[in-house]
Length: 237
Image (cartoon, rainbow, N blue to C red; front, side, top):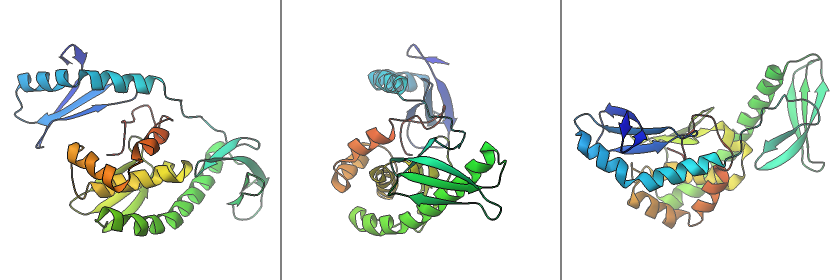
């Protein structure tokens, strides 16, 4: 529907406050409590029009995500570094070996493997690496934030870098973060832990982020430089 001269996806649901999200490609979604009057929604959108236009422009300048074939000579990312991919035929179990001295990553797969199969092997390795990295990061940042997650997990998410189930105190982090620089992963982790103080992305939330991680804006800008997916939202949730 059209609100304040903008095409809006309006969603009414059980919630306490209005929420605005701008997606890649320029799509705008406004979520509102069930009985919110149209005049209130109109005023809410109009007041945030400059914010909406700024984010639409930011998305327009994002780099599209590459579509790799996982073939020898391509580059693959790991913790913000690009590694040359070596593809080695193997008769036994497939696997991945990082060769940081030469700036290479060796992917051992059966002869005649498809791009999908090679991606699957690499994805397993990415998940293993992220599982090894995260415990130390939670141990480092939970005392800083003053909140601890009861549980955490890794998901392949298309539209969010991270989410937090506040009631269960469970943090989910996007597997794609293992490809980005480590401070980007730390930013999302701190972002989600901060939701255990404040549910909303309001002034209190961002004030806490300034307190816990003063340079968070730099890390968010780096994280958002590459488009996560066509329907991706502008930030962690």
